[in-house]
Length: 135
Image (cartoon, rainbow, N blue to C red; front, side, top):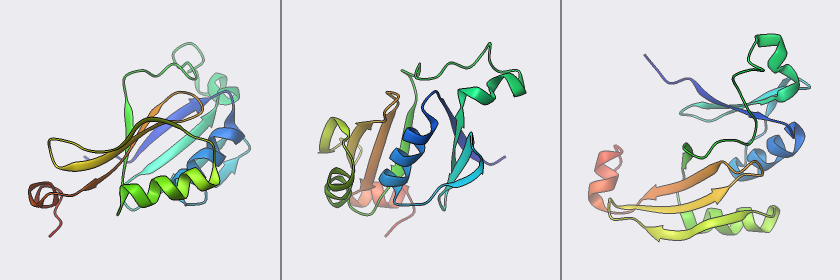
């Protein structure tokens, strides 16, 4: 089994797609006016408008901007550089500035416009680099 993607349902589709394009530095592929994907080397982030929920029968089970338990994580080369790049292109809510965590990752926590937590992290200790298959 392989994790293929994470999908976010949003009432403000264009804003959220633009936000994640700015955060990742990658363009979204729009399959319809209400569904797009941002493909990274490890997985895909899909973004879906609430307008499409009725088509898939999910309008009774998915609720936009209601997440308070999941964190979307992106591994980056340098957390501090990414923070500067992102801050220069969009207005973003920083939950936790770059901090080196006890498990050896440097981490920056942000919130997307719908309130979902985003962790940009980079392994900085030898143990963390080894755990993530880096030298």
